[in-house]
Amino acid sequence: MLLCALCATVIAIFYPVEQEEAPISRARVKKAPIRVALAPIDRAVHEWAPLGSDPFAPRNWIMAPPAPTTPVASQEVATVVTSSEPAAPAGPPALPFQFVGKMSDNGDQIIYLSKGEQALLARPGVTLEGTYKVIDISAVQIEFEHLPTGQKQVLVFPTPNN
Image 1 (cartoon, rainbow, N blue to C red):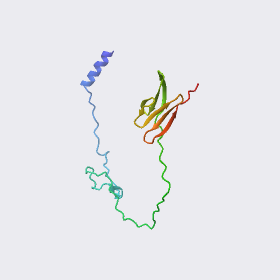
Image 2: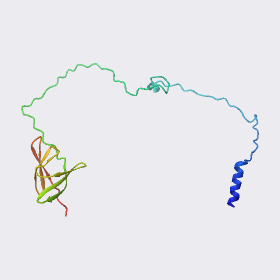
Image 3: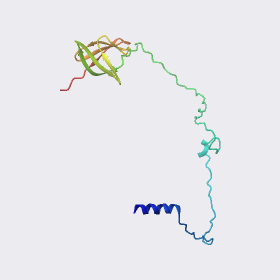
């Protein structure tokens, strides 16, 4: 049965049946005139095309600088406030480190800190990133010295939740 279907398909491919087309009488076909209504072009909308209507013309996509303005004389006078007190020195920035964990190595405390994606090891006397020096490590906190300002900062370890 499949062989018969295959043979019929091959025969249909090589011997197509032609059908006669009925001639179309000209009496039934009427040609209608084509009417095109053109709307006036709004020039305000098309002002962005500075080179006319050529779609392939080079364009400058950089906005033109604003027109220069003349300065207006102001009647206001700026007053300067002077203070006899010197400005307070800015303190060190907040510690950029986060506590990750700690380990005891032969009596030495090693603290694992993170700064973003970077992992750091902190031991007493070590300078981290050239800015923070580890002064002391206790069981509950680590003490840093901010080298540019000389001020001390403390990072308290989180308490474990039991």
